[in-house]
Amino acid sequence: MLTRALPLVLLAALGIAACGGNDNSSGASGASGSSGSGAKPSKVAVLLPDTQSSVRYEEFDRPLLTKAFNAAGVPVQVSNAQGDTQAQRTQADQAMTNGAKVLLLDALDSGTGAAIEADADSKGVKVIDYDRLVLNGTADYYVSFDNTEVGRLQGQGLVSCLGSKSGGVPIAMLDGSPTDNNATLFAQGAHEILDPKFKDGTYKKVAEQAVPDWDNQQALTIFEQMLQKTNNKIDGLLAANDGLANAAISALKARRLPQIPITGQDATLQGIQNIVTGDQCMTVYKPIAQEVDAAAKLATALAKGQTPTGVTTSTDNGTKKVPSILLKPISVTKTNIKRYFGRADFPAQAQVCAGKVAAACTKAGL
Ligand code: BGC
Image: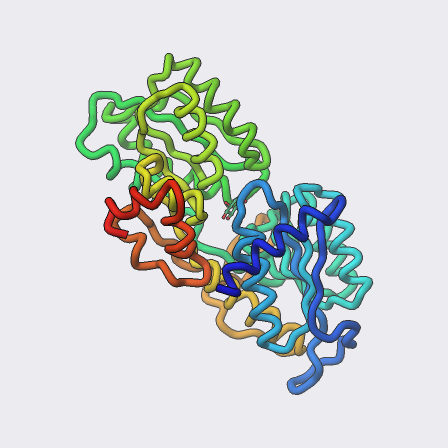
C-alpha cells in the first residue's frame, strides 16, 4: 500500500515545485570520489526527462531507482527536467558541482545528452545512458530494453488484434518523438512486421506521423487530422506508447467512432485500463524494476571505483561502441494482464479495477 501511495506523493510534490524540475536527494551527500572496494561510494545523479511523455518516470523509475540506491548505500539525487533541455543541462551541471561522480542519464534528446556527456567526460564523471541511447555521445555504458523488439511486439500485437481482416485494412501509425533514438527503433521494429502486410495489400498505410516530444496533446491533434483526412476510415493504429494511444482513444470517443485495435507501451495504469475496457488492444510491458536493477548495479560499482560486471552486448552510438545491457520487453493483452499484477513496476489490480473499470474487470475475469 505504502509503495503504491509513494508515487502519488511525489507527483504532488512535483506540482508544487515551481519551474524546471524537482530534486530529491537521499543518503550521505558530499562523499568524496575516493576509489577502491570498501571505499565510501561517491554520489550518483539520475537525470529523468519529463513528466508528460509518459507517467513511467515518476510512477516507476524515480521510486524504484531511489529505493535501489538506498538499498545499496549509495547517495543518490534524482532530477526531472520537465521537458526542458536547458534545465537538464543545468541539473547535470549542478549534480557534478555537488559531487556526483556517476550520471544515470535519460536524455531529452541526443544533442543535450552529448553536451552533458562531453562535460562529464572532461570532469572524469562516468555516464550511463539510461533507457535512451545518446547518439554520438561518450557514455561509458547503456542500459535499456531491446527497443527494436518493442516495435516488433507492437506490430505483431496489431496484426493479432486485427485477426483475419484483410483487403487493404486502413492502418495509421503514431510514432514517438523524432529526437528520441528509442522512437526510431520502435518504428523500425513495427515496420519490420507491418511493411510486408502493406506490400502484399493485406493492410494499407493511410497515415504515419511522428509526435514531437511524445506530446500527448499534439498526438490528439495529429490523430484528429488523420481521421479528418481519411474520412474516419482508420481500422487499426500503431501507437508507440500508452500516452499516444490514449490521445487517439479520446479522439475516437469525441467523434463517437467505434473502438479499433490500438497498440501501446509502458503498461501504464491508463493503458492497462484501456485494454480491460477494449479501447486498446495491447501494451508493451518493460519491467522497469529489471532496468533499474541493472543500471543501479552498474552505477554502484562505478561509484565505488570498481569495474562493473554484467554487460552483455555493445551498441554503436555513431562514434563508439557502448557496453550495454538490453532487457527483454513483454507483450501484454487482456489475456495475460493477470500474470503481472503484484509487481512493483506494473499497475496494481485494485487501481486498475477501481471505479468505472470494475465491471469490465469482472467481465475479463480480473
Ligand atoms: C521510453 C518509453 C517512453 C517514451 C516517452 C522512450 O524513450 O523508452 O518507455 O514511453 O520514451 O517517454
